[in-house]
Length: 122
Image 1 (cartoon, helix red, strand yellow):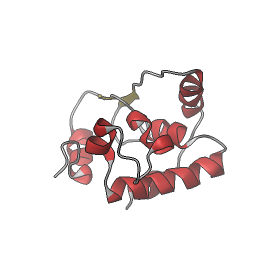
Image 2 (cartoon, rainbow, N blue to C red; image 1 turned 180 degrees about the vertical axis):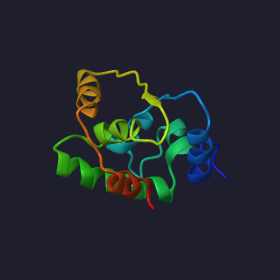
Image 3 (cartoon, rainbow, N blue to C red; image 1 turned 180 degrees about the horizontal axis):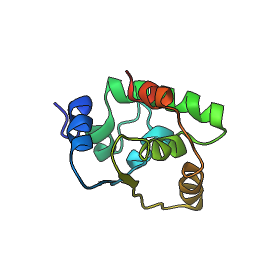
Image 4 (cartoon, helix red, strand yellow; image 1 turned 90 degrees about the vertical axis):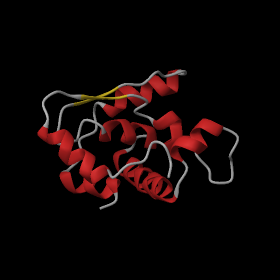
């Protein structure tokens, strides 16, 4: 089992019942949604934390939604964070101007409950 995986549905339900908020560190998932390629395993941390069939399926859904919204998949990943049933904050540390732009665009993204569920995979 990968370190960063869990039963997301159960965790979201527990989180929604508790007071407080969640700070989503690395809201862009180390740029997984823009640079991950199953054949490229050069970034050991990216591979260890994010490579898996479920995440590559999410990546494909994020790419589709990004085309629909006219933004990058990274912006979709960040835009997904505040659309949870509990208070969340998307934290990230861009290394490039393009990374900053993706963050700015993420704040403009409005996702329906159906789109959030679709991105999540169910």
